[in-house]
Length: 130
Image 1 (tube, rainbow, N blue to C red):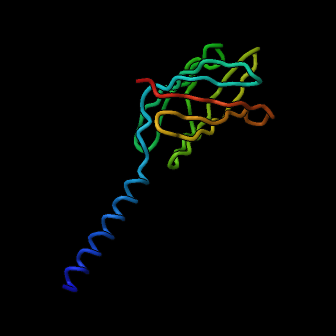
Image 2 (cartoon, helix red, strand yellow):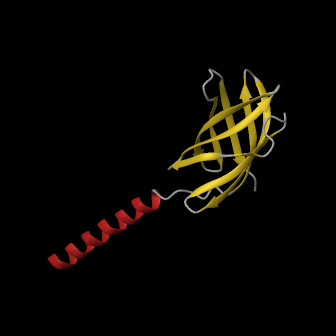
């Protein structure tokens, strides 16, 4: 009887480890994400296209205002539900680098964008296109 209880306890423990390991796996973010960026109450439509390559993502960001026309993303990092990446934009003869910091929740990413080196930021919300 003691051997059976030990076996059942070991089986339950291993099942719990498998569940924890599975929960730590990251979700595949490949696909098209549609949404908007907001700054001081103004919204700009965004399209983010991600493709998984090795252990990271490549992708482009395009907006309706024309500041990001197929801007390549770089420095993509995903740690569980936290996602960060950078991209370049331009307008009025100037170019700038932005950093996005997002949290994944199901099929939605929400967070902030910040202009690197400048005190300018706003929010981003993207939903995976079905």
